[in-house]
Length: 451
Image (cartoon, rainbow, N blue to C red; front, top):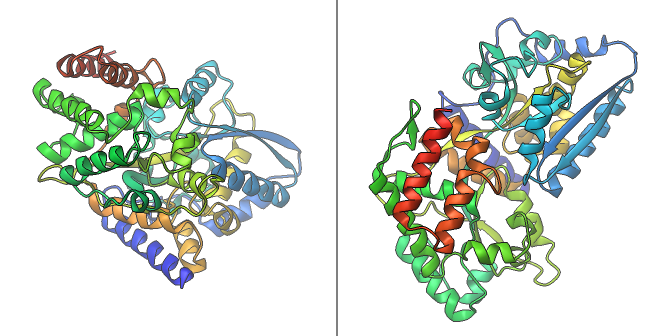
């Protein structure tokens, strides 16, 4: 029954992807590139010279484990290629890798955020043009639109891994323990805050750190006003509208829906999946990417204090007449322009995204694949994380607003010096008013776009 449900979930995800023709990541494009079989044949001709390449990525423990296993399988298949792995949590990762990219000593293969193409590609000079390696990298598995989103100066800077969006996930075990219904709108969210406070003041229905709050703010405003956050490089919201969103954020703290930033900092965890209060069910909700939720699910499942907890996908909270939220290319794989072995680096990318063996190993650790072969294998074999599959289908069906790549610019989202961290930290601490928070956020965005 589980296998049947998994296959159904993947089918739903694939149907959602195919329906989104402008942003979908299914295959069927890329004239002038080789097929998967041809790419494998070319790989076999790569020679026997021993080479070493470096591969770096961020993520949670489950992603690390699966990726290392896939890399080991790649090295077994190509014994002349040694892959050195570097990985870690997201906090501080972009700052470290941006310095490596700009310093010319980046890893050969890099897992990158989509916006890094805008921020760090040097307009097509810092990453290799992967179209030059289409003899070993099967680009026909990806839609032309998804590839076009990964270009700079007409050059293919990376290959898209997955589409993603944010959803609400709830610890059903804790909600049942508190005797509270899972929220579906503003009224039920505020009611949950009151019930959790009455049950235990250390318990909260939802937890959001600074960057989570920035994304939540956009979700809330898009739900209320029905406008994209940024369009054609211009912020679409007035100071008064953004202030209303900031007031709502403060209201959630005051209503015991979310803990303050000070409380979260006192938990001494750099991410929510490492936070003991999330792991043990005291913080019973997160607003997370569908491609990253497996790390939260794994952390909760491995709780020694409160074993057997159940994490479920919630409805998109209704705050207005519109469906807020956006989707984006969650991440991509790129090759450094300074790599001494770009062909072998491209071979590793092809293996991770298009090879049946690697697809089975990695499953949905990076979300539902953009590779048509990846989706096919997941569907045929009934493998992957059921929660991720269900979430991906749900977010692709719901979220229609576009994301401007500058939204994730490091000047905005860096921890602790980015605009989002400063604005939401000060607002939570009561150091600035909602009007000042709106003004500071707008100024930070304007400075970033006009730098």
